[in-house]
Length: 125
Image 1 (cartoon, one colour):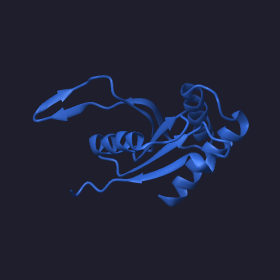
Image 2 (image 1 turned 180 degrees about the horizontal axis):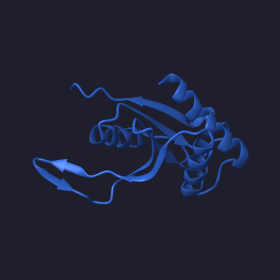
Image 3 (image 1 turned 135 degrees about the vertical axis):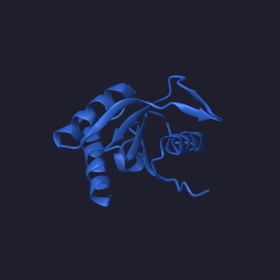
């Protein structure tokens, strides 16, 4: 998966390089999805993520920003800094989806490399 991760991060850096900080999250999401599709990478934008709770399935409107090749979740942010709550949100999405790898991508930074946080979740808890 490292090659795919490199392509994802390269695409995020390219989008940031072209647009810079300060735009809406939805703008970065749309452009990153386009950049990944130009590379031939399968993505789903705003994928519904239902919640299973003790035999009950809830569709409460939770959505993954970008799901790459049904394996990697990209959670995009435009914030002053990434906080523990952002990490916790992505870990929850990883648990719910069954994916084990996700990236928090904060586009509100001077250099995109400073806005990237890799999160791995082991489902064998």
